[in-house]
Image 1 (cartoon, helix red, strand yellow):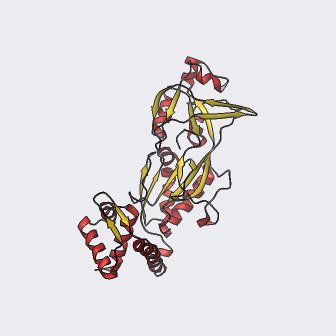
Image 2 (spheres, one colour):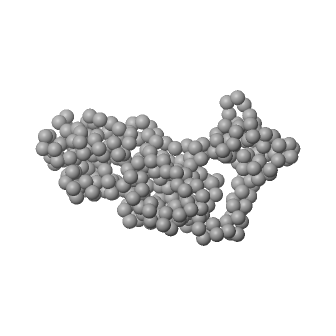
Image 3 (cartoon, one colour):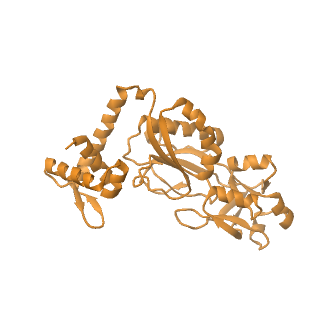
Length: 328
């Protein structure tokens, strides 16, 4: 038995809650993972995991052993990194998941600069607005927008999206330009709806001007769950849009969108980069986080002061639900 492989297999089973998922993330077959765990338990003379037909649970001894194992695995990686050029040139595969508009409009155009600095990092980037099982899908980190509501992940506040309301010129020519947010609910105007992936529901949008506060529900003719499709629907004149500034800016410059209710305010949407609490922050992940921070500081800087203790402040939690419903 290779003790390193056995400990790594054990850690992945605990994190994924499944021998099958652990085997997939380690690029091994399930039988090999099962055998490694059995050999490890035989060597330690304790039961680390309780198996049933439906799930795998860690025992009390297994939980205590797991805490030591993940520290040991992290120390081993640090030791190898310190003795190689990897400490100067981060390398290896990194799997991330980000909102589709953010990938298309900000991240991917900026990747040539990232690769010029870190040519030995291989990124696998999921571009979606769906809920990600970070541990089960072996994703190193995700970028998402929304409020923090639980404590299952470590998250870093990386930016705040300034939101605005827009419509296509042909839409306004057909239906007129609303002058007050309440007009969006009068039956004449329509909006494009956006489904929040965790709940499968569209959330209300709140606007404020001084002491006046309006919840603009609107009447969606079309509801989508992808940010790029959401923008395309608005450009096609299918309804009024709530958009982050970085998405709207080029369309305003080209005349494809017109801003509405500019004297009203919408609470900005916080953006978070999140990763598992027991996942070692490798050199490759650290430089990716730094790159995201710099990119967001340029296009959507943090307006508040919520940050992450692990990086020098105090925010440990996952992203969960949005402050408003436009795409990220």
